[in-house]
Length: 481
Image 1: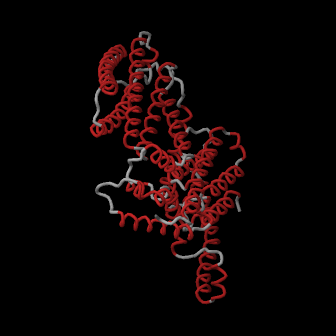
Image 2 (image 1 turned 90 degrees about the vertical axis):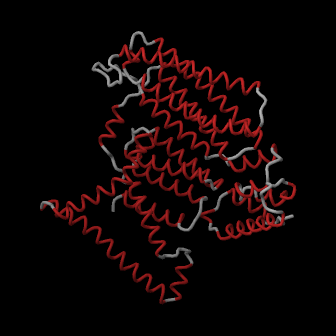
């Protein structure tokens, strides 16, 4: 049996033992360790590849976040890291952007390709191909038929023999229809994890696209008839855009610094302003990319265009800082929430994008460089963010600095994290005027506590995580006041 097949089977067994009927916990960290070791043993040269090692470390970091906090965010980051790792194990020099596309092909296109090839071989094959195909089918049937018969008699003996049934039940694996479906899905995911599809045109494009710009001698595809016309249009456009953005930033700063604010009207101003500003900055980056995509970077008279473009980027950075101030003011008035933390992440990623666009213009980098570095930036922010317990941070901030936040918010938006705090303090907290009466809130709180304790006691070791254990220790002896 091939080494890859052995590691695939080991990973599948570990996957079933760790994740069947389980939730987020230590299982994520153990599974990541197993598949990373398997990939490293399959090809030891991967350990010398910087990108592979960075993504493997990122997978372990996000898995650690899942183990510590049972975080969905950490799990999303972990899935992305593993998908990238799978393709980087096949295409060692691939950039993250192309690795993500390739791994998508592996799970969407590869099954279809295998199906089409199988049908073609059944309908039209040469003698040699027929022998090879028959050998492949024979090998599959050699393992498949005994496995199916074994499973059939396994269920028969389990149903008819109580002693055998009790022995099997000790292992806490209920081999049912649900388990078979879970096994098949796991087999599909892991098969294409270890057997990544390589699309030659994508691989070649990734290798050929350089981070530095090169002058294109032939005529470049453009909306304009000549480079002089494109240059003049670009200068005019950036001058007009700078004038418009200067007015917007000036009015924004005047409002922030001098205007008297009704906090409820201010909240509408913040919501509309931040969303529109982030969108406008993204469009600004795209416009800049168009004008500095190629030959205009080498145009002898382009200094004026560059100057106005950099001023516009600088003004967009100022716009982002006013958005940061707006979000801070909103948090100061109404407290911290997941969405308001998310706004900071969007602003951070956008700020990184603007900074990289500045570098692209001043150092004559290609659009491919900007795409590659931005993907790394977004991925890095996702990985680092998974190492924080955001629900605990929200609870600590709001209970320390925002005494006016209603108890209804904690129960509905932080139902587990806030349980210890609510059990001890619910009577002292304000309530929404449309919220529950005291008696109904107390009943709901008791119900939440019982549900958490029941769920915690039903968990197996695979689902253990530090955050749930902390909550359990804090509430198990706490009686609601």
